[in-house]
Image (tube, rainbow, N blue to C red; front, top):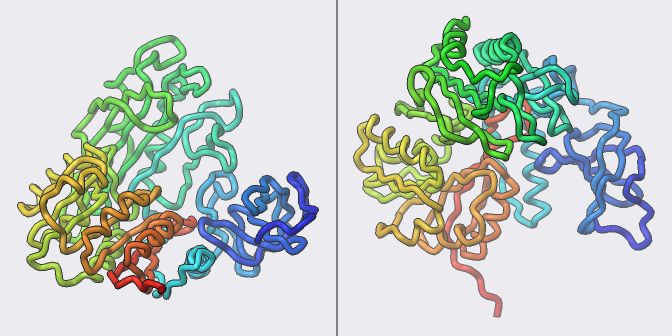
Length: 469
């Protein structure tokens, strides 16, 4: 809703607001003085005290100051870290209410853009708890110049970090590793990295664990500067020995030191193997997949099996056909298709993922897969094969207009689109429509219980465009 002429709502103004509906991604919408007010990370039915934070492009955004009245369908939180950590914003809803909320958020997003689709029944996660196979933690302090912490960023604070030893999204091995590494860092007086001065040592901790094999990867992301308060270098042998004595249910098959001297707050840099090998192995729909540190792999393994099976069931007849797996990651979708297809061509930008995808195809005895490294748009023009089946599973940023048009130019009857971000899915669907591809319905798969995240699957069908005389 656009501002009314002479509207009195001003930036910084405070008022009480009831949330009437939800829109992806976890945005609550209410009405104040006949104007729509949008508030992030709230729930339908809540009554809030809020403050206007932004007026731009005909929209008013506000920040919740306090929840005055909870929604009727809310329940007590189960998590010790609720409202401190920045995740799991839907955990005061029952799991059934969460599923309903996610459907409504995505439906409102598409309806508002003039793209109404039929919603099939949302598919729940096989595991509502302890479903994540990867976590990325940050070193920091809970408050400025406070003691060392290791965990997640505090809600609403990019620099502050809180310990999360009781997170319910991961199994106990993650908590044991998290607590153990923090204790090691404190007892050895290791220093945290300072983002402002670019000095210090500790930056991130990445943990992966295979659901099928229980293999664990631990990656310490830190600089190559002096590690402790006394100016000593990092004692990698001591750290490896400490990790290997932690009481874990799984097995540490990969312990890595990431030499991270970059200026960005991301895990990057040269990798040094301190123990085992540089990857762990996961199994999915009867296939084995090596997973290295930088490769993308769905964080909910059991949910991924349902996601991929649901998507590929939309194109059951792929025998003797050439299939493209675009944004292929470690080649999971492509290799599942390769069990029946004539040939699969996968394209992925991340070189490490492509290397692992090729290795995975060899492990799985698949000689009809070809995985190419590069930008999808650029690579498509250099491929001699013409696809008969295309499956796309892009990152959160979506595909963009150039890539979407390039894919549509193959003019094949059907394209399957798997999306982890309904907002960019919407943008790409609107471009596909201009190219004559339309979706009639959508299936949501809940891969991220207790959070606002959800996966979407649509089947795009080529139709003749109607030309208005």
